[in-house]
Image (cartoon, rainbow, N blue to C red):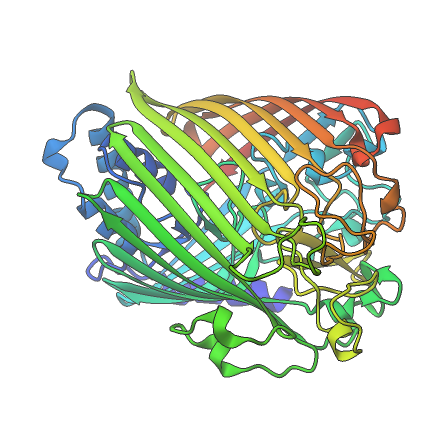
Amino acid sequence: MRRFIAFLLIAASLLSVSAADRSNYEKIYPIYDEIVEDMKDLYILSGLSLPSTAGPYSGSELKMALERIDPALLEGTAALLYSRIENKLDADAASAVFTGGITVSPEIYLHSNTSEAFQTWDNWLMGGGKSWADNKTPLSLVAEQHVGSSFYGFFDFSIGTTKTKYPLTSPFGSTVFDTNIPIDIMKNLDFNFPYRAFVAAGGKNWSLQVGRERYSWGPGQTGNFILGDHIKYHNSARITAFDDNFKYTFLVLSFIHPQNYYLEGGLNQLGDGGQSAYLNGISAFIAHRLEWRFFQDRFGFALTEGVMYMSKDNRIDLIALSPAHLFHNSYTRSLTNSILGFEFDYTPMKGLNLYAQLVVDEMLLPGEPVPGKEGDRPAEPTAMGYMLGATYVMGLGDGILTLNLEGAYTDPYLYLRDGNQQVEAGNGREQKQGDWGINFVVPTREMIGNGGTQFFDEQFLGYRYGGDAIVAQLSASYRMPDKFFAGGSFFYMAHGTHDQWTTWTQVNKEGVENVTTPTDHHQTANNKDPNASERDAVKHVIDVGLNGGLYLPYGFSVYTDVHFLTVINPGNIKANGTQFDVQWSLGFAWSM
């Protein structure tokens, strides 16, 4: 640690020379940067379809997006947003070779119900879009490097707590009061930092990024179907090429292979051996995405094809890394699982944008067995997801008012499929407890308890609520950039018994029916809950949330959330009744 800090100090002293004469627009802006929200609002106010919804973004890409708009035609709020974005991009492009910053962001959390129903982050401020990925670290030291006109580097040295507190007998939410400050440093300090650290290079029409980053693909407010923003970081490599009406992205994400933590009898999330444990196998999500703009920039369309590639013995077919390959046609079921996504958005008038998403994990083709058809042979269960949404943006006074309405539906077996263990063993297609599937479910590896234990936190790669869900949300927000923001939301979800550990099965077989969303019984095995067969009800979640914040002088800010949460049938068990919780968070931040 001392060597690393010394390196930063030496680098700062050697590289802090002015580079104002060589603009560098290759800075990478994260998906949660305010400039991204500004650009989206500017496009809708200007009557254009959304800018690219595949983030993060390089400065060159955002500059090209800004140049689509004629500032002479703007007035009021739209003109202010244009100037704000332009000034930010130009100022960042003229930065010194080496720049650094510090942010202090302590947060405190209070809630009224400490029962088991609220002892996970899944039920903490969930309806307002809050997730573990949004949780700020109390201390962050940032270093940025602008080298020449084409290269950029970023490193975030952050100090925070693990998502899974140690010991596991005192999880988050088990006490009325909690904080993001690691009280017991050697047990709860998150040694997995940095969350963002990468090198990037680019030019006017392209960008290459390699390192650790957070991603989001799609316009959804409750989540997105191919890549959701709820995962805190990905180990990744990404290249994008873009022009005025087209963008291409090729992305590779790397994960720990599930054979390292799926043991006989089911999932063992605690790996033995700590950081000395041998990790074997290749697990990667590989995808390419194409985005087009049509009809005088009013209509946007995106097509995404991805594949989950898993090899137990570290072998990989290089065709999986081809940016021009049709992944579905690899026909290597024992190694891969493909997925297809479609996105549409249309701005019929200034201020109103309509959007939709469709994801296809498994669908019925002509001649194939029909799920649920009596007397038909065993069939693949359909696995698809649908989303519709509308966003209205208007200038109100000196600020921006945004209204959003969104609904989503996902099939019970979306993101789930059998793996290759049973194929190799000659067991056919039936997945059993302890068999890992080639699922779109990925682990984040944590070192907890003074680095002595591995913990693998599995989450859906795409939609944060996974399959077997019906979701609706209405939200409103008002913000005056650099001054304050305020908002509220109403969230509802009906979630069936299936989760990321539900084992996949064919249907139309004896004792295995074709189920529809939301399910009220769990007919297959489950790799985390051996008592999943006791699930007998649909879980309903209602969340009413309010939030706000102030930007103060000298880099200070304060923000807060309050949520009134109702969960009916927690754990999908009717006997659990209904649980209520009032959750409140308060945060302070200072940046320099």
